Image (tube, rainbow, N blue to C red):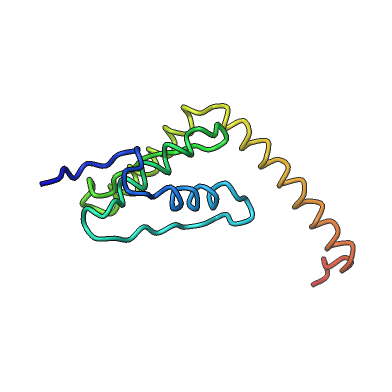
Length: 128
């Protein structure tokens, strides 16, 4: 009987799937995105996840975190643990946080400009 352990080595010919998943994650125009992986037990779902994770971890602009929701029976526990995992991972990647902060500031400035343009087009609505 074969071992049912995931691997980051492509023994199943999943390179095209790994590339497709990584391309989606790296394409800012497609974000936010959700990628579903479906298959029977032992079909390579966990291995595919490991291969995608290994590829994405090569990019310093991407934070990859692992979270096993099966470890939590109560929904509230899972939410708390997930948020804790996200925060811990982001804090361990301070360079990522700095870049994310810079991007958030740029977005905020663009939103303010857009609001000013909209207000300028529609005039003063303070009397409404």
